[in-house]
Length: 250
Image (cartoon, rainbow, N blue to C red; front, side, top):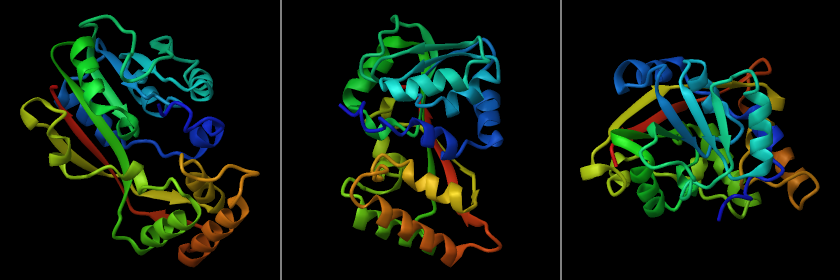
C-alpha cells in the first residue's frame, strides 16, 4: 500500500517535477498507435503531468490516482480539459470496466505497484491486443552531480532506494510483465535546467525526501543547496536526464 507516500507533497510535486519531451509524445501518436479517438488509462496519474500531455492530443484520458492530495491538484491542473476523467483507485483495482481502454500509461509510478496484480488488471481492462507503456524520467547515473546527489539522499533519506524508485533500466527487468517477455524499449534525451529554487524543489518532491518541519529537513536542504552551488554556472544547473519507455502487450 503506497497510496500515502506522496501525501503532503502534491504542491511541490506539480511545481518542480519535470515534464516529458515532445518527441516522445510524437512517438506515441505516430508509431505506437495513440490517436485522438483513443481511450487511455493513465494509472498513477499523480498531479496530472503526463495526463495533460495526452489530453492535449484530444485523447480521452482516465486519470487513475489513489492519493487524495495528488488527485485534488490533478483536477486543478487539468480543469481546462473536458476529455479528462478522474477515478480514485489503485493500479491493482482500477474499477474500470472489462475491455474498456485502448492503452494504459504509467509515468513515474510502476515501481510502486504490485506488478503481478497490476498485470492481471491490465489484461482485464485493456481491449484485445492493446498495449501498456511504462515510462520514467531518469537521471544519468554516471554524472558526477547525480552521484553526489545520491550520496546526500542516502545520508538523509532512509527510504531512498535510488532515483526513479531504484527502477531497473534494462528491458529484461520487465520481461515477466510483458507478453512473451517482449517490449519496445526507447530512450529520449530530456536534459533538465534548474535554478536554485527548482533544484531544491525537485529533490524535495521525492517520496523519500524529508518534509518541512521533519527531522533532517534543514540539513538536507543545506546539502542540496551546496551541491547546486558546486555545479551551477551563472545561476543555472543542467542535470543530464533521459525519458525511457517500455511498451508492449501484456
